[in-house]
Image 1 (cartoon, rainbow, N blue to C red):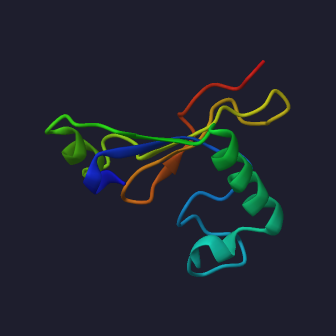
Image 2 (tube, helix red, strand yellow):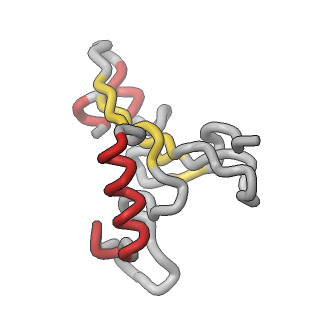
Length: 105
């Protein structure tokens, strides 16, 4: 994503981020790490258009993504019942934080 200046928006809160490890895994196995329910959530987000990919043309933008100064994936805002105040963000270097969109009220 970052190499091409692309950013993914509204990644489902209820699905593992790409490369994110489940407690039982030592190494990511891609889509196989997702449970059947998580695959359904991801599939629904793709079908209904809420999961969107945006490509930025600015010359220096891919550099900021590759340097992990800006996220390549923004998770959706957590629901009102979520214990998290903010959604997830993922950077090229694999770091995930909770400084994304604020919780829905």
